[in-house]
Image 1 (tube, rainbow, N blue to C red):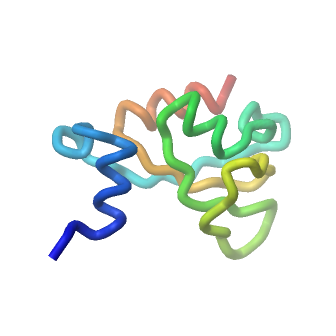
Image 2 (image 1 turned 180 degrees about the vertical axis):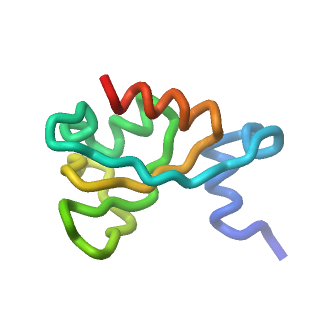
Length: 96
């Protein structure tokens, strides 16, 4: 039996990171004037290596998954996946 699709995708995106570091999920607030509110999912991945797993707009009760790469992040919150180091850097990136 072959490797599950998720495992293949993770290895393609993250390479050897998955072998040496843990991947974590974190909820990040997106404020109206945040730099993140002007970025697309593709911008975030390209700039930081962080993977956007889901997004919640405003006071919505549920997250949307499979957000298109070209859609802009809106005020609310996002759930991202990355290593400790990536998440620390991402918090600084989000606050600029």
